[in-house]
Length: 129
Image 1: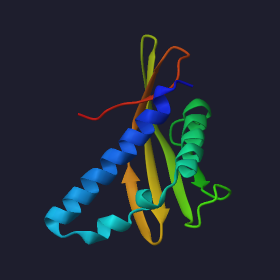
Image 2: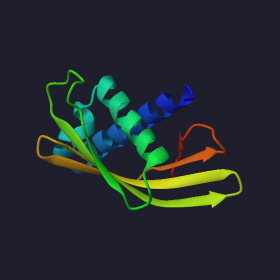
Image 3: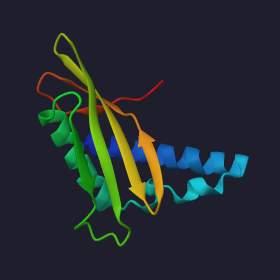
């Protein structure tokens, strides 16, 4: 796995958190401060990333799986429903869409990341424009 992949996951999570925090302040939407992402520790992120990469490699379009942070040492219970969306192949490039619903403390966050890889290379999170 590429050393850039963990950084991409962290940047994605940080961008979501920053955007949510700034938006919450501007629109007085304080409930965004307690979203599941704010409770995630690095070990949670690593565990979720491992599960997502496994799903990208092994699951078919439309298949779902569950993840939870049991065993990561985090006192906040976090779980996720991960559903594989469509797969697109263009030459040697493969891209897959996911639907991820993170849950913690009664809050849910819905994410729709896209990952692509070249040949047998590592999956890379794609930046949305």
